[in-house]
Each structure stands twice: as C-alpha cells, then as structure tokens.
Picture (cartoon, rainbow, N blue to C red):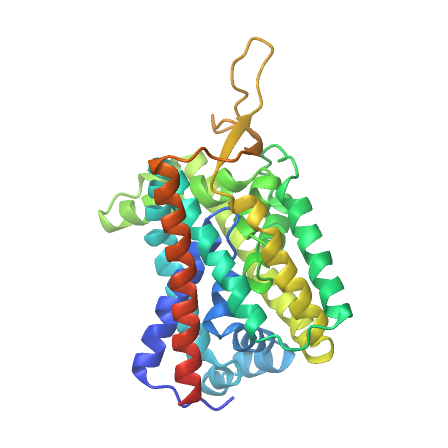
Length: 337
C-alpha cells in the first residue's frame, strides 16, 4: 500500500488512535466505531491482516524495512501510539468524568453513536431486504449482549488470555464494546483498572529508582495478568482482522449491515439514564469480588423526568451528534481533495 501521507496526517492518525483507545476503555462504546466513522477502518483491518507468514518471514530474516513497509507500519504505528497514550491519559480522565458526571458523559457518547449510525448509513447505498435483515440481526445480538448478567472475576491466566482475544472485538467489530464484554466476563476491574494501575505504579517506581516491587507477589501477579491479556489481545486483533478482511472482500453488504446493527444495539448499553444494580447478601450488604469491588448484576434503564439535568443531557446528545457529523464531513472533504 503506497502512502502519500504527510507528517501532519500521521499526527492526525495518532489523535484518532487516541480517540479509539479512549472509546475502547468506556463500557458500551466501541473503538471500532471511531475507526469506521473516521474513515480508516478498512485500512486498519487491511494493515493488521498483513501480519502473516510472509511478514514474519521478513521480520525474522532481518529485513525489517521491508517488513515495516509490508504491514503499512507508519499507519499502524501512529494508530497504536495514540491508543497507548490514551490508555494512560484520556481513558483515566474519562473514568474520572464518568464517576462525577455519568449522565452527561453517557449522553455525549449516546449522541456520538447516533451520529455514527447516520454517518455509516449515508455511505451505504445498497439497502436491500437482505441488508436490512443483517442489520436487524446485528441489532438483536447487540441488545442481547447489552442485557446479559456479568460473571464473577477470574484471574486464571488461560481465561485472561481468552478475555484478551474476545475483548479486542471492540476494535475489529464496530458496535461491540470490548470493555463491556469484559464486564460481562467479570474481568473489567481486573484487566482495565487493577492491572493497568499496577503497570503505571511499576513505571513510576522504575523512574524513581525503586525496584522493591520485584518482591511484591501481588504486583508481579498483576503484571503477569496484564502481559497475558495483552498477548491475547494481539492474537485476537490479528486473527479477527484476517477473518473480517476476508468477509469484507466477499460479503461486504452483510458485514456492513451487521456492523451497523451492532452499533444500533449498543445504544441499549449507552442509554444515559440508568441505575446500576449490585449483587446483595441476604442481610442487604454488597457482594464484593476478590479486589473488594462491588459485583454488578445489571443496569436498569429509566425514562427521565423533564428538568434542568435532562435538558443539559439532551444538549450533550446533540453535541455528540454534531461532533461525529462534523468529523465525517471533514474526512469526506479531505478524501475528495
């Protein structure tokens, strides 16, 4: 794939990767939607599936320049760099904002998803009965996943590896939220909070010359868990990319229909007005997992009363819609030039 991108284009790709990483961290939001709406989804999938036998042969044969060019390395590096930056910055900010202003944050995301549905559907001209049936199927699957009850936390390394493979679907399948799938699997706190914090603390210790963490079995265990999860994510990302690239080539109408349906179905998770229910003991106390986190049973949705908070939330929904449509317009304008 010959690239005509300028340095500024790669900076913009890094910013898109940052947005993609932030979206992956939020339950109910899919980083793949960012890739889809921003116009680099197919190139992202194409580049990932270039990590194959031929590219590995180039890499282990010491032909690293050819390897980098073959896998569209500049593009992948910019996207992955943005995602890594997001993992330790923007995603933590989002966690903080969701804890303080949940309705407003969810409203903004709700609007972004609506805007994404519009942006995708506008480019999809072939609305046959078959395509509509695929869309409905995707929406039903997305809604079903939205209302599943979470499992309990499990730090078995084989299960953690499977979590990595499954959760990466949020990047390769727009509309399926990887972080929400981790909630369903019971390992969201373990894999996206505790293990990430352990890595952050480890980096901080190393920079200050404190290596006492190597004698901390809990820290080492968390780093093992994160390493296995990351390995599973890489395997899943590359594996899914080969499957999706094949499907996009041969069954593009069906794939786009199902993806759009997934995104529609994800609205059930992102609905701003919801209460979180927790598992309770018979005496009325919360049931906690191994990390002393309350175990979520499910979310219950409700229709809000009209008040100032609701009006502000609706404003955020409209801003979310406007943001996505503006980004889509900008991407389309640049592509036309």
